[in-house]
Length: 522
Image (tube, rainbow, N blue to C red; front, side):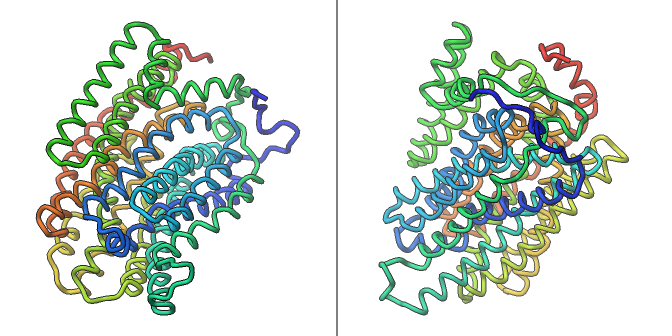
C-alpha cells in the first residue's frame, strides 16, 4: 500500500511530446479553467456579497486573498511533496472533488463566517492543482517545448477568469430579474452562481482519474524507481506546516532546530500582534502570520529531511529571487483581476451582466498573454539563459501606464479599452516563472519546487495585495486611489528579477553537482 510502482508498469508508455501528451494537456487546461473559475468568481459577485453581509472592502480583500491564499499555500507544501511520491492523476481527481464541493458550499453560506470557511476549503482543495499540473506537464513535454506547454496549461487561468466574469454577471442578473424577492429556496443570485460554477468539477474529477500516470523524469530520459513509505512521510510533511505540530516536527530534528523554530514562531506572533493593533483586523493578520511561520517551518523541515531539495530551492539564490520577484509581480495581476469589476460597477452606470461580459471577453486576452508569454520565454531562452526572467520583468513594467489610466478615467470606453492590454500583459510572466523554477531543480523535485514557489509567492501576492487595496479603499473612500498605491510592488518585483537574471544560468548549470553534494544519489 505504501509503494508506488513506476507508472509504465504493465502499460504501454507514451513518448514525451506525443499526441497523448497533448490530450493530457487539454484535460489539464480544463482543470485549470474550473480552478480559476472557482477561485475568481468572487470578483463579479463582490458587490452583492458586500451588500448581503454588510462587509467592508478590507473584508472583501481578506475573503478573496488571505482566506483563500494562505491555506492554498499552507496545504500546497505537503500536497506538493505527496505529488512527488504518489500518483498525481489520482490525487488531482480527489482535489478537484474537494474544491468543487467547497465552491458549492460557498453558495449555501448564510454568514460571513460560513463563507470564509468555505473559501478556506476551496483554497485547501486547489492547493494540488498547480503542482500536479506543472509536474505532469513537465514529464510529458521535453525542455524545448516545456515553456510552450506550460503556457498553454496556465492559459486555463485566463479562460476560467473570463468565464467567471461573464457567466457570473449573467447568472446573477437573470436570476434577480426572473425571481426578484420571491427566490426559490431563498437563494440570492450570487449564491446560485457559486453552486452552478462548482457542479462541473465533480464530473471532471472522474475524467482526470482515468488519465495515465507518466514515468517520473520521462521527458528527461531518467528512470526513477517508485517511492516507498509514502503516507508516514506525507503526515510528517503535514506536521511541518500545521501549527502546533510544527514544534513536534522541529523537535525531531534536534534542540537547535526546535530553538530556531520557536524564534520563528515568536517573530510571527510579534508581527501579528503589532499589525492587529495598527489595523484592528484580527483574522487577516493571524492567518497571514501563521502562513509566514509555516513557510519558515517547512523550509526548516526540508533542510533536515531532504537536504538535496533544500539545496536547490531555499538555498539557491536564483530560486529565492524568482519567488520574491514573480510573487511581488503577481500583486498587480491579482489586484487588477479582482478589483476591476467592483471599480467598473462603482464608476459607471452599467449592470453586472454587461460589465461581466465585457471584462470576461477582455480577460480572454490573458489567455493569449500566457500562451504568448510562454512562447516568448522559450524564444528568449535561445539568446540568453536569463531570457525567461526578462519576459517576467517586461510583464511587470508594461501594464503600469494603462493601470494609471483606468484608475483616473470616467469614460467607460477608455476604461475597458485600457484594461485589455493589462489583461494581456499581466499574464505573460506566468509561464516564464513556472518554467524558470522547473529548470532549477531535478525531476523528482518538481512538485515540491512548484509548491515551495507558490507557497512564498502566494503569501506575498495574494496574501497582501487584495487586502491592502481593500483596506486602503475603506480608509480613503476611493478604490481607484488604493489600486494606484499597489503599483509600489512593481519596482520591488523588477529589482528582484534583475538580480535573479544575474544568477539563473550558473545556478541551473550547477544543480546536479549541488544536489550530489547535499546527498542526492546519481
